Image (cartoon, rainbow, N blue to C red; front, side):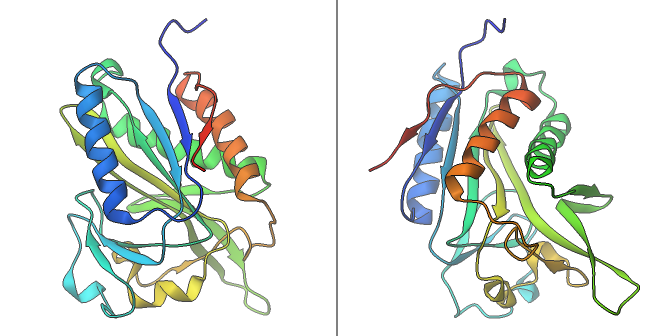
Length: 226
């Protein structure tokens, strides 16, 4: 049995403002540095764009469409909004081998295992961040590749924050204001777009189970905001 303390698991109801999310993550990172518990925090945001540390101004196609925030995470521009599950993961990598590449691979595997439970074969693509699915377009022999989940992390004093986002049923037209993750030649999809119906609560249960499978750590009893 794992002797490490469980990772806290918190689910916020409604829409969480992005500045609030940044402030909360900053506070928890400082707490973890001082020996506090790790946290997986699940939220939804109002429609917005975030710019990572590698973002290019030319990839912001319509900066007036939604608020734009500097995220501080790795990566480029991405979209967050209702119908998308955002998972902020604050982990003590100092106690996990100080291997950031492995940590990112574990985040990817977490998404892949979760999607597999829904019958969706998500996978990595060399040179492209995120998790992708193959799409067979009607009357077109070419297989299309669309992104279904984004990954962006930041590490401070070996504590991670930011994390992953999975498209459940967001408005995919909202991605038109950016070049998602700087990749213009591929599209974006969602579970709903793929014909998969799942509630956010059902997805959260799958995420929790697969987290424990991938990371080998128990999670504490989930808590919800009112």
